[in-house]
Image 1: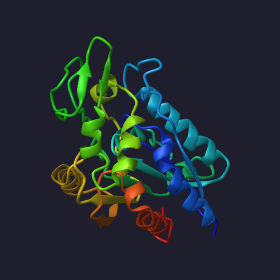
Image 2 (image 1 turned 180 degrees about the horizontal axis):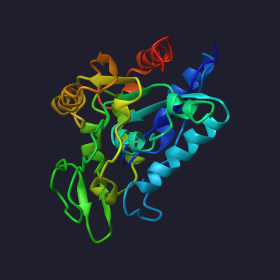
Image 3 (image 1 turned 90 degrees about the horizontal axis):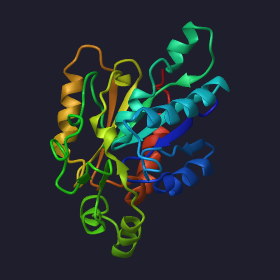
Length: 257
């Protein structure tokens, strides 16, 4: 059986480089794995909402599917919101009904925004409503930033000091409009879904992750069939690299669409 291709989607403020070691590990085991850059990260220019991120992810996955690839998106943090929205109509099952090859066979949320239709993190043109205290909004510039000192404690709390400081120094400004966007598609209703819980995450906290899970699983039509758990912080793809690689390899196993 041909191995599926992993498409890794980062969260807010972060470039795809956070996935570099994971991608190398997966490739060394014979998997194709790539990461997507989000246009809203870096604000060059500032994006109005998450639609450009959605299109970047969607076009990447569509090309792979058109080449006959089975695809597993790996969505981290905010990447769950834009990445989930990008998957409408891209499941392998839906594409097959149209005579098309390839498609998404499973979705992996890694402490990510697994949202229902209609969800909107914050009302448009508001600065702090429903946002973490470490998120510093500048409405005039249309951006939200995280100070390096805050990033070390909330994003990289389980990493060595020097590594955490380096990662914090590489953070980019984030277009605030993505957090004012409204979700209209929930892939976890149609595509087999894995959710990864990280018990020491200080930004995407366990109570929030468990709330998203319980809300989704309370519906009659969800396809969330696998829950993975570890004691890592937010950047499990760095602090628990081999463990997460194992999670993804299990996700690429027999329980596919």
